[in-house]
Length: 468
Image 1 (tube, rainbow, N blue to C red):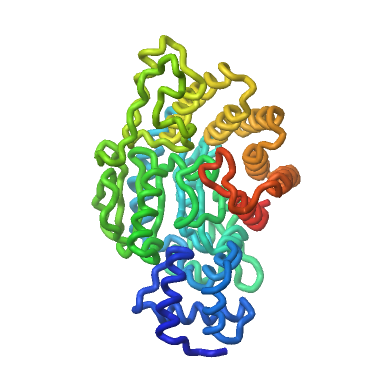
Image 2 (cartoon, rainbow, N blue to C red):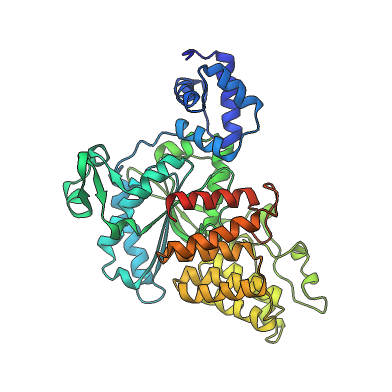
């Protein structure tokens, strides 16, 4: 193994890594880059690091190659309740406010841990929720944890940790929420493990917010010690996506090392010692060049009268970008075209106003009972409400109307996995894999918000690895 990589190769390699996964390796971090590449070289079957770099530069890399490379370049340095000030703010301010706000109406909480590494942060949040929400069975709680490193995700889903993951952690955490296993391993108890959904997501390449990967309408997003690894341009792109993934009033948690400038106009800094916290306030987002025109009155031309909808109904249309949903209600005398009802359902769903979303989706179905897309949209909203059985019925109706509805099979597989029915889940995922054979990997799937056939196949593979 060659232990010395030339300066020229490191410079070219840092640019390649930036283009592949958005990771930033300036000259001050070339030592880290060199060590990571030397480690990866062996796994890829190379005895010489320079030869490995030449192969990376000249070969068409598949997703599995990028994931394997990422596992050597991303540092999963974490432990339970790391950076205690953050969890103090969660426990004393953010979560109590959310719980009080939702206690008497829609009991739902949605939290996303990005760059979750081996799962310590996500499980720490789950432990907090378990302690604070006494009637947890009456709540619909989503705790999504994502990462680019497949090895870290596998370890997180197993829930097995050594003493090192408990450094600076109060002893009662381990005593109450873990069971000691052989060889100094501690396993998180099943009730906490089931609260967290681990899945692969690339913050640089993947689409979010999205109903498909469950990244929309979040109350809290933790993105701590993640942005520091990205180039400034990529970091700004990621933060914009996270902003759109939050409910109005939702919070974004960063670390002081994750400073990004400029932030989206709708983020308001919240004073909190020791952490960087922002609250989404869509009223402050007023950049004219980002506004989407209000929905005009529907006239005889139907959907064609909506100039910005001629290319199809967008999957995500955030209300903070100027969408005015009131004109159709006041001018149509109770009649709304199903395409417009569907648009309104999506707008409300992306705001987290799920009851209104269901009503508008049902209007679309009432107007066109044989359109499978409307049943699929209804299912995505129902599953967010926690009504899994009704969502499954809607999906089966969609599949009855369209036997080749890939996304419906995919969501059915997800829901069956959530119910613990791994046999049915695998069957539905197998149906998806069979249907994907008719597509090229680069083909974008209809209604998928830009997800390609190849990417969906990779998502299924990761779900088979971390869940099903």
